Image: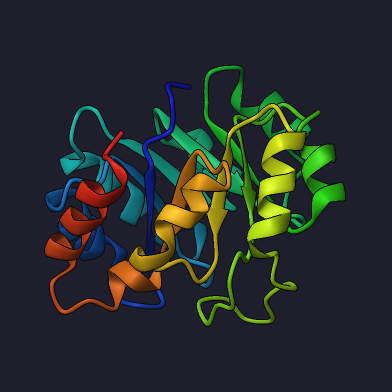
Length: 204
């Protein structure tokens, strides 16, 4: 996997049609995008993913949330896994050595375990209180984020309640990338907000 862009945008179906969200996010300069549709069937997610792939910029990387089966069918698509999903080891066996695999963690112990797994990045969160996830895990905070970034070798993607005003602190703590949902998708002008993020944190 090439180095992670600083901005990792999540096109979450709970906000709007993820296809239109992806169009707006790409228009704003996003080049690392996750399709997140927790309630969609495999067919629906695959249809959305194929639509997004049809207009994604050539240099964009696309990740699908949870669905190893959908990632396997689609070409050049990675997968992001949670603690209760198919294990990263099994996902790597299914998808092969070249697909991007990310793995969610919520504390130091999980992050250290993830560092030994065949994943490309470790997601850590929620860094701050978040309303984008039902039953969120305990808040990690900047101090623990700093400690975990120092303790692991793999890139850390910080997620959860991060706004543009706090992005600098998160990067200073050692995160390689920042995953953003609400601060992008709740904007009245998503392309403009994405451009603000890219300009502030650096698109790559």
